Length: 307
Image (tube, rainbow, N blue to C red):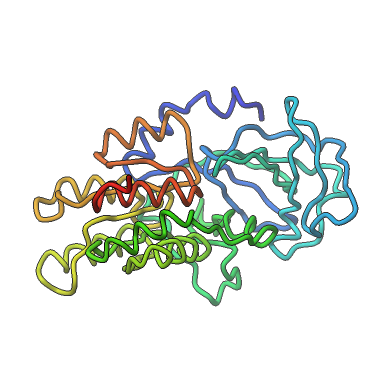
């Protein structure tokens, strides 16, 4: 599947994403279980190319290859998800993805098709399904279970470097003890942990929500005087039940919540997101994960200048 083929209907995918719907690229990893990745993360799907593997590479890395003049790593998604390795499978494909300002390939057994899912049809997986933190949402496609892979968790398992914000930004947070609490909304355990750590460095308390619907419920309760309020919401975009776009739209359409500042913080990037961010009324869009930029944005929106 070429880039052109994937993006042929990107305009319709964009309209769906702005209304709590998402387009998923479906694939398998060795059995009949369906997995999915957001189409906006996918640049291209290729037949498995020749790859080089160097000593010392992580066990999940199948190797690297030249993609349009750039050497990119390829992660064996079969191994990452607990399946047998796919590197020797002749029919395997590489899904080239770009998000969080990085490019990488994921080795899959085969790809299926693109499907559209409503946010309401996506739900957090039950622990009994056995996916653990590797999957952050599930749905039914033609009666079959589809699992959305938490790519952030997969990548963090390979490189778990903890991002620190610059000392002057830590100090800026400490000098402004009046900074209000922040609501962090993200369905990824890894992403939530990173944000909590960042705001802890700035001495800012967090309220946590695992999806947009939980966030909206908490905010509505706060507006009625139930619990301490927040002044700013930092939300992922891709989430089950209610995505970040729909959450922002609901905040802007609710008079009691309208004054809230909203930062959409996502591994998705590009002009399509930027247009939707403006459309739904978010104050900022920041691609994951840029700790200093996010910290500066929070200080700008919540408190005095850090200059």
